[in-house]
Length: 401
Image 1 (cartoon, rainbow, N blue to C red):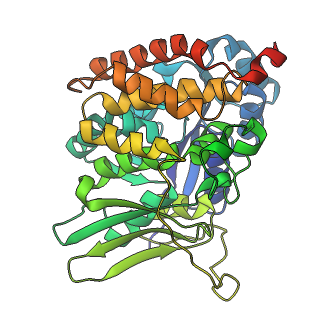
Image 2: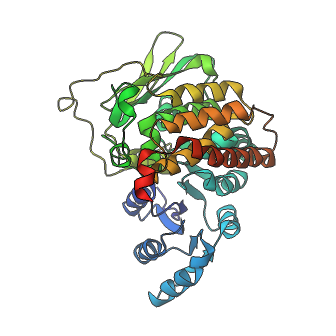
Image 3: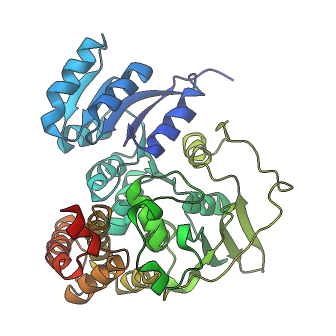
């Protein structure tokens, strides 16, 4: 077979855990892929170190005040990598010939602009930024479909569904899509037992190595709620064909049930490199560095229903998905503010769902017919939730001050 030029890959969120996994897979296949763009938020020293290791054409730091450090650090390392700062240069790089594949792993609503730019430019989009679909799912999938962009989800659950369906098309023969949840570090605890949960306990995920925000979302089950909304947009299925099962072993990543009674499941060790290898190589399979699953070493596969009384964030996400319009944007924004406050010790663990519920009640859904409308809903929810924090102060917050 004739050799082809390597695909140029932009890794957005390069200094995070997903970025590290993506770079690990790419480095295993230097004949197939090269890193052309690296982007990070604030960790300029880590970004420079990655540029030394991978020698991209471009490096982007989101925080414009760090541009001089990035520029000088690259020059001091003897690199020809060009430095950039801010959203606009990143969006332009993602949209032009600097790359043909984009790993979208910027956490939070901050990743929406570059995700949309990649979709509109028809790139292969390895989507690890769930907030893009929660906030603007119809816009992102519509832009991708219009431009012929391939969206391959990198969340292990959606990647599993993608593999079972062999595409993003859930045809009429699909009876049900079941997302699995690990249950997080507090599976089995009652609502009252969660009142004194600490930041350290919440970020200690039993199976996955993730950043603090995503780890807290897993602990509240909001992560699974956001994934339900993602699945709705990615695969075009409604509430009646979506379900969640808690599966503490995290080996079955999702299941698809078909009209004939067959159920296909994707299994594997909990390692994001598998999903990233699927996204980079699809429809081929490439080495991810992850060993195969030895079921003799993992003889138990347990499943249970989620407890939406102890973990109401999952219920709130169902409700936001059914309400549609701007409701998922409100849900996501309120959750980001609440989780940030919890990580700072300003509010307690149970205040997270309470603050989200307050925002959804105060800001009823309106049509999500433009990015401007969604961003306004996002901003309103953030302002409202910031004001409401005062009514949810944690007993620990006084000690911190």
